[in-house]
Length: 159
Image (tube, rainbow, N blue to C red):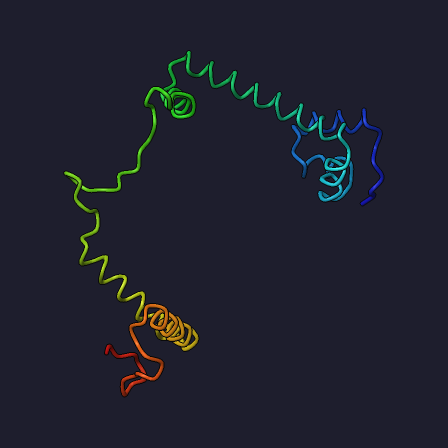
């Protein structure tokens, strides 16, 4: 592949013909995709060419969407309302509670899962060591333990 930039008028026609899709533009002018991206980053005119094509494509998509809305296509109506009707209450909401505000997952199941997660973490010696150091620091900060108090398993014990 060559890396010489074609004249800007040629590059502009290619960008328009390929709808500003970088991979397709790179293939058409026989350069690497990274080269196209580099040209675009370093040259304001090339950047403007890509932006112009993207804006034109966006205008076309919006025109087609509006045509479909006028034709009564329900999915397009819903899509438009989700995007532009939020101020009027057209928003999807994720339910984070069950019926009457109850938890979706019972607290005892949450506690069981957390206990299992911690047990799994404690299998890792590095995590156990880090956790032990953190507990010692916390104990010293809160004044709950003296520096030498530990049970027979090396754990901390309350005074």
